[in-house]
Every structure is written in C-alpha cells, then in structure tokens.
Image (tube, rainbow, N blue to C red; front, side, top):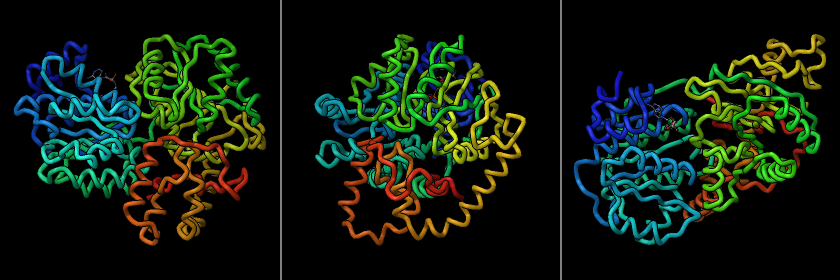
Length: 486
Ligand code: AMP
C-alpha cells in the first residue's frame, strides 16, 4: 500500500514524502480513504501508531476546497492536554507546508490575545483543549456553526480527566451535519456510549488492542524497597547497570514524587528534566524540546503529563512506581519499542504493589521476569526465587473475586470510590459509578459543569494525600478504574 493509493491530494503527498514517510501505517491505510469519503470514523488506536497523520492528512486534503471565515473555524480538533494539542499543531505545520492553512491553537497557559487574533482572521483548523474552547465560546469570541469536521482525540483520556461533560456540550454546539472522527486507545463502555451518541454510521478502524505491549520491549521487574530514599537509590542502580540507554522516561504515580526524583537525580548529575501538570506551558514545551533534541537524557514524568506525547526513539522506560491502573502500564511501556525498535522497560516493585502487578499481568498476558531473578517479599513462598505465572495468575483470580464480591458495595458507596481514584487524577474526578448517581447530586447543573471544567484545567492535580480512612491497605477494587469493567 502506498500513500498515493489512499486518495490524498498531490500537495499532501509531496509533504508526506518530504516528511520521509514511505508507507502508510495500518491506521492510516484504514482511516484515510474513509475520511476522504466523508465517513464518520471511530479509530481505536494509541499514539505511536501514526494516528495523528491518519486524521490530519485527509483533513488537509479536504480543506483545499473552501475558505475560513472570521471566528468560524472549519474544523475542530479536541485534545485532552496542551501538549497533545501543540503536537497536533506541529503535525499540521509539517503536513500542510504546501498549503496556506490557518491553524489556531486554543490551549490554557498561554495568552488569549494571540489565540483570538488568529481566530478573528479566520481559522481553517482549530485545535483546542475543551476548557479554553468553552471559555472563548462563552465570551462570544467564537462561532461553531461553520465546523465541517470534528475530531475528538484520546477520548478515553478525556474521560479520565473529567472532560466528558464539556465534550458533550461542545458537540451540541457544532452542526449536526458535520463529519466526526473519534479516536480512543481503549473502548470502555462509557466511551462506546459516547461514540454511539456522536457518530453517524461510523466505520470502525482499529490497530493493536490496547492491552498489548510491543513484542520488541524487554520488560523487567525490579525488587524495590518501600522507603522513598532507598527506592531512589535502587532506581539509580538499575539505571547505572544499563549501558545502552539513549534516553528514558521515568514514570511516577504522584506529581510530588516527580519533583523529588527530578531534584535527586539532578543533584547526582544525571541529565534530567521533568513534566508534570503544575508547570507553565513554556517550561513544559522547553523540557519536551530538550528531551526530543537529546539535550535531556532522562525525563521524569507523571502519566497525565506524558500520555500521548510524541517522543521518538525512547530506548528505556522506568516505572519508579507500578501504575495503579494496569492500562497505564501499557501506555507507559508504549513509549519505547516503537515502530519495531528495541526497547527496555523496568518496573520497580515494592511488596505493596503485588495487587497492581497482578492486574497488569492479567491485562497484558505478558510473562514478566525479575531483573537479576529477584522476587518481591510477597512472592517468597515460591522457593525457586522466581514467581511463576500460575502463582500470579491465581492471585489475579482472587483479586477478581474480591472485585466481584465488592462490586455491589462499590455501587452503593460511590463517594469512597471517587476519593480513592488514581493519585494522579484530580481529587474529585467523576468515575462511572459516580455518574450513575449523578442525578441525585444537589448541585445545579451549571455549577457541576464549572467544577468539571476546573478539574480538566487543573489536569494532574495531586495533593499527595492518601485517601482518608483507607490507610495503606486499600481494597484493590477501589483502586481500579471503574471503566475497566465490562
Ligand atoms: P502518532 O501516533 O501520530 O503520535 O505518530 C507517531 C510517530 O510516527 C510520529 O513521530 C510521526 O511523525 C510518525 N509517523 C506517522 N506516520 C508515519 C509513517 N507513515 N511512516 C513513518 N513514520 C510515521
């Protein structure tokens, strides 16, 4: 399959060649002809699959007909984070070099003035995070009635970040006759419901299931002490034992640990930068550029800050913490071993992480080995020094049972579920269980919406507190994302 066969315009094909692409990726081969045929598309694909070009390339081709009018964007792309929005803008710059497209980026953390000036002149493409878009809409600075193509990208992330009410509102503002392209890495039931609501007779395109890790990534578990200081020392030991690191992302579950680990590594003269939700936009972009240009070798990051970032050629991923949501493990590991390249992933596992590890093993079906053959405390009963797949599978099963038994409890006690959501997320993010009871809440709709928006804008707020009343031993089902359940 060649790009030429997909039906893209000559000008776009020239830009693709200039970008050095010889062949469309599977998601591009499937989606591009459908977008060009004006079909609605539901794409199940993660970043790293070439998904951005799968929608930007045909959008550029289609935009060759017609012109933008002041304050009336012709196409709208919704992204959950500023980085992703900026990345999509970069894609437009690259693929629309032969076009006179006006692209406006509406993201928080940068001045309104420039953004509004661009809009006033007329934007062919508007790339926005939901909060900033609604702000400008409410100020009467933007009209959505000219939107011909709507892209909702990273829908599952939008759900995680509490953006769904905003998205539903935005969708109501754009014409019913629009073409809609909807992308998500995973398809939990809530996302399926939204896709049903937003898309008309969509064609579904899908690449690799979200629960799979790339075969080119060698994954290792590292026995780690619980105490933070010792854990950091362990991480350095593992890093120093590897002589093939070209660059690496180190993931932490909590924002405050991102900052501490960053400081600690810097003090020891590692080439390090960090990404978390509290940084201003300029520092984030500077750090990312430094990492892409190999000026920074280690990037310490939180999930929300790093999700979906287009960082090619990452050789290593280190999980300083085992992620609480198994899905995040897949996303983190997906940062290396891209496009058939080799990658290495090390996860520091403390005895308290056993249940999360079980969930990861269950989701991925991968057989993970211990670095230097070290088991964690909880695995000690296995005398051969290596925990067996069976042992972990059986403990995963018992976790299942706990979940089943507790499911009805969770429904009855949505508040507890809510407060025990992933550390990284806003404290009051609304999981699905909560949504089913949302009608009972006493807040007026408008106030709820505002709160949701604030949540989204705050991105990965984390006050670092352990959820009240739970102590260290939170039941596993309460730490699971409710959207994982079918
Ligand atoms: P994405 O999934 O959109 O984040 O893209 C991941 C990376 O793949 C980006 O660095 C793109 O520039 C690159 N890419 C996209 N399409 C192709 C292609 N057809 N051939 C080679 N690289 C590509």
